[in-house]
Length: 117
Image 1 (cartoon, rainbow, N blue to C red):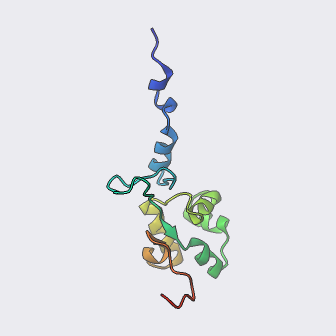
Image 2: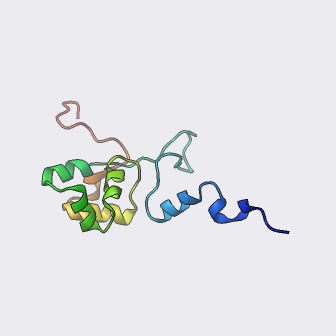
Image 3: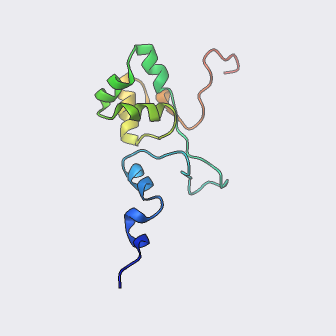
């Protein structure tokens, strides 16, 4: 008698998510803080990567090459589709020569020129 296919790890729903998280990138969709009170709470990391790149005239590919990641990863990070690993976040901040808090936040960054900030 053979085992059902659903017992194989690759056949489990969400098996790909584990691989993405192990790689240091977690998708905001479906990612939840286990200690969150609200069932719909999302773990979102906001960033200023796009702004920092634009200020310095750096393309996504140039940044990706410097960090040793695929250029599409930079796009995913900029759009908030993936959250970086701590190691990658620190490398990005170091690349731009700023503190990690300048690049990343758990709250949306205030708009530049906003008089209320």
